Image (cartoon, rainbow, N blue to C red; front, side):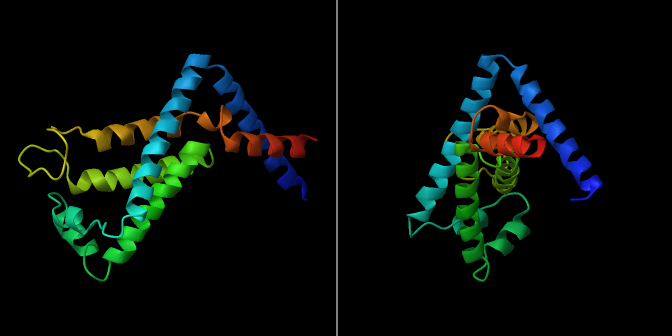
Amino acid sequence: MSFFCKVEVANIVQLKTELIMKSNEFSSGQNNSLILLRILIGWHFLYEGVLKLYNPAWTSKGYLLSASFFKPFFVWISGDSMIGVVDTLNIVGLIAVGVGLLVGFKIKWASVGGILLLAMYYLAHPPFPGLEQGPAEGSYWIVNKNLIELAALLVLYQFPVYTSFGIERFFNRKKAESVTG
């Protein structure tokens, strides 16, 4: 390994160590709240994905065709040639985000994936004044559950939640030990 590679690896390990130290600056209540938020959102994504996977009649076609915002785009992806791929990507995305958040592995990637999925759901049926509301349980105005969950994932993305609890913590610890040891 060249000198520059060793220096770069050492810098990465130092940054990860600083993040771990920053997460230790949070109180246990703050850490536990972030972990609970991560696990609950992960469960929600995983449950939705598994539910869709085991329901052979499920398709996103009706939801997409009834889109009230960016309608041409959502009609296009709900076409017969695309809907199979769209449904598969939706299910795989939901399950991958759910598992990542639930077990604490690649949390930042899972957060970004979840943000993208939720942004698509929100943009298909945004609760904007004057637009027809899509399928929803309740009445919303600008803010709905998709936007709130998206914001919660943005919070998880911003904090080093992978240093507190989850599988990723052990991988980061082993990398740090192998480089310094």
